[in-house]
Length: 60
Length: 160
Picture 1 (cartoon, rainbow over the protein chains, first blue to last red):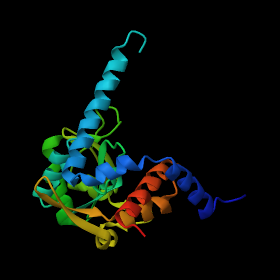
Picture 2: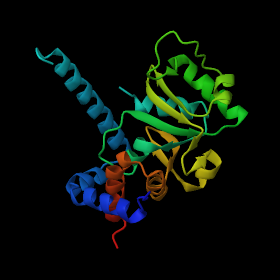
Picture 3: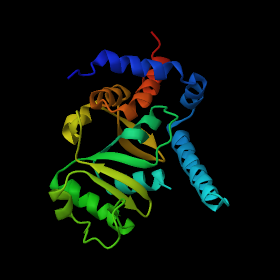
Picture 4: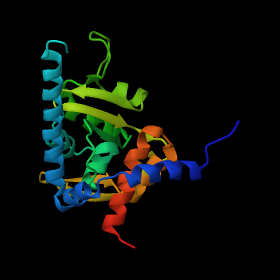
């Protein structure tokens, strides 16, 4: 049996990293911790609203 | 929806010793990823378990995803017999962890925390370095994208 070594994990992480939108990260780092958590709650609310809308759709 | 402010305030104002880990800790450090629960490592002393139980009781903690009507009782004896609890409460979802994979218990993690002030509350949060270390140690594929982001954040904050 072959085990995935750290190098293969590193390669996967590096692939994800190449696709990151660093401008989003930079903008988030400009926010305070409190602002980040407030934003997270707003996103949760938005996601819940989208789920509700999806369920209510005629073919949802 | 999880009311992070209410959950943190409830635990903190009741004197519960806990460390923020997981997705909320990642948000604290700048992650843009959506998380819907609070993951907290709690100290497993008798006194702290008593404080934890008292703090959450008004919010009706129940095992998340479990069918209603199970004989689950939220009390100190239950917490002492168990270790990690995935709970739903009136103020949101809360994962209470007695230990985490690769990181151990509260006492082992507390030296790798920063105290943050948020919503007027001081609370302990795992450091960015420790968060990355633990996620890497866990080696779960679902974490790989999160690790990539956390490492990018670390590089933004500490450019070489």
